[in-house]
Length: 259
Image 1 (cartoon, helix red, strand yellow):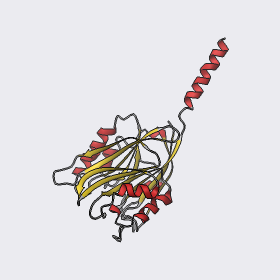
Image 2 (tube, one colour):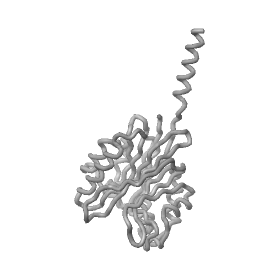
Image 3 (cartoon, one colour):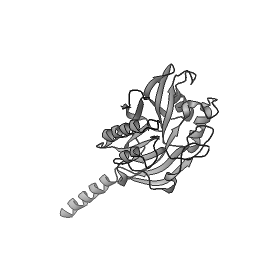
Image 4 (cartoon, helix red, strand yellow):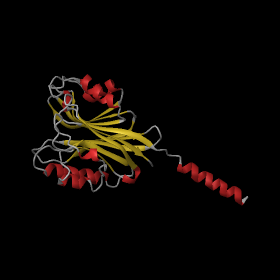
């Protein structure tokens, strides 16, 4: 009877340990230049083709228009979602040009929950936002995916406020969280120092490459970061400069998540 009890405990422990399986995720940050391309010819098929060619699981998009005049009244997240066969999400940062402007997310997985977090800014600065999506992977893991675009001005005041807001929002989350986006801040900036009090950058040589401009990157301002670093393994990291689709290079990483 005692032996059977021990065996039962071992079986339960083994089963619980393997209940949650590892996931391999390919994630991408892509500033899509409001669909315009660097030649200002508004080519959504080209942008979607670029995304599809890399076969990502999750995409954080910046400079996303929703029914603006300059985007010919297209709902860009929905259009790109349709063209890539991915679920789409839009988070408004501000009303603009007869429509809206903000962040977008594309996902191979449906969304459990979503949120649009308005980020602080000075009165004369552009509003900024963070798009948040909670997803459950095919192996049953729940992951939080955040895409954002911080202020672009030379003065760092807005970016620092926005970085602190992100840290405050996510410092005590229970979810494994990925933070991607055009942060408009170089690695040695105060903005990045603040963000790194909660989020970790991959220790990969490619992660140090410049990401802007796409026709000859001189500075790194586009990022992939994560919390709970013990749960993530970086398999690959690439900076991909499609210098027709956007003025930013795409950043892409393949990560193994082990709960």
